[in-house]
Length: 292
Image (cartoon, rainbow, N blue to C red; front, side, top):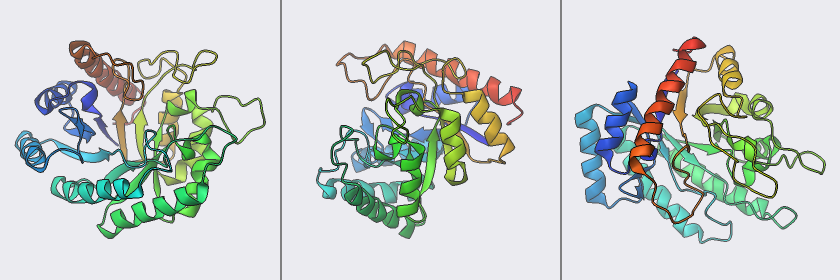
């Protein structure tokens, strides 16, 4: 296994992201945002500087955390927007030697309303095919998207989009109701979700949190790995037992939550410190479990 992380939770500028990564003892970053823009949305000249800076610092990028089909895009959105993101991402992944790109299955519609499943499948087939044709792998994350409704929804995606692989997030089940079970819906169980989809998992996001309060959709609290209800240690043990050799990418959300829009600028020193602390805590768990 190897360790990486979404270093844009430590800082917006790349130099500080690299500093945090090296302070943890890592040489890889899961690229998402630089200077407030996603890696596939940066102006070309700015991206070129980012790529050169990564090369100079000997930092590699195993994963793009893209905006493609994410929780912020409805299935009724213009598909040309998505295709343009795909076409911008491909040459940038090739430039950086990145093989994996996180995608989603578009925002969930309120439960009970038309989810337009066939349109989702159609779009994801096209998205996957474009990356596959370029020798790259699209990986779907179980987030606040159609595939995140349950493990069964995710497995349906794998069935409908041949060749699609998964990035499994340990905490996302904690604040998602399991729509595969009878009402009243219970919270998803992270370990149960993992065990159902594990044969398709090629990447893992390490995050931990506690169930939302009544009537809320965001976790009551994001925690250090192993301190919440994400069953991080149990899942990492299962990964080891299953012979998993892929990446573990921290996505702390302890100080910076990218889908909780409240208009407030985060305390970036706190973000940096908590990100580094989170990385060290993940190192400790990985060492204790014999993963490294």
